[in-house]
Length: 287
Image 1 (cartoon, rainbow, N blue to C red):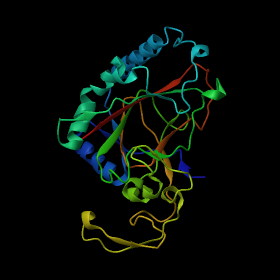
Image 2: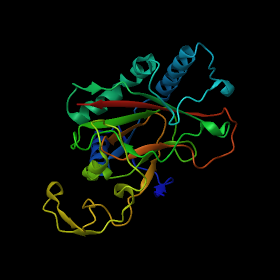
Image 3: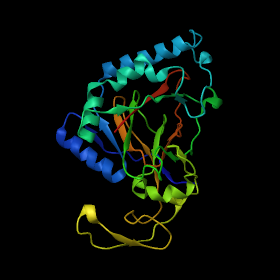
Image 4: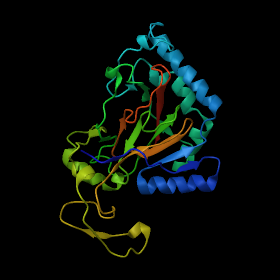
């Protein structure tokens, strides 16, 4: 079983402070993910929640009602909606077109000529109300082909419309595994970008035996490792998965080479069954 840290919070870097934003990009380069705060106001969050519910109710011909969980059918073992026109919905265009979202990606890539995917969104229901609603965990994967696209070419993003923590649900990442991307060559069998990583793969399980040599600079750092095929430069111990904590209106960026998955709630508190539905939106821009 992979070790997952569900409780330690990650630093958040405000989009309203250029110095913090640059520090956030440095964190992204080093760890493979970062949380950018203050991307959406509460009014914008509420507006986009409303647009999502309008989409869901519309495509269901009003058989799904937001205030009646008895009408919420099971639709995905992973909580992901990627069909029914969601990619071109008013909801997703609203989030994609958010001024701060566009500014962050433009600054990250140093251009405003950006390409965007039309992926979808994630909706996570309170599975205490219905145990079949609990989404799958441990489906670790990367979203970039290790053989065909070994370098950084894609930064993925999640704009969250709710707070996310171990009491709700969220994103699991394996920090710094984007720096060990070539270790996934052995399981890359086709040209697809989605590559699932088994729970016993070395990139998430093998104990690291590292011998460091003094680097000339960060960009030229070299290390010498044991013969167990481990990327040089990771801390000793085991690669540890981490649940990323973030707040409504935050944008979470992560490298397409980073091993990750989503997770259902793990620390359950007493609350009314229909009190909370977890809403995520996936937005991906790359060049």
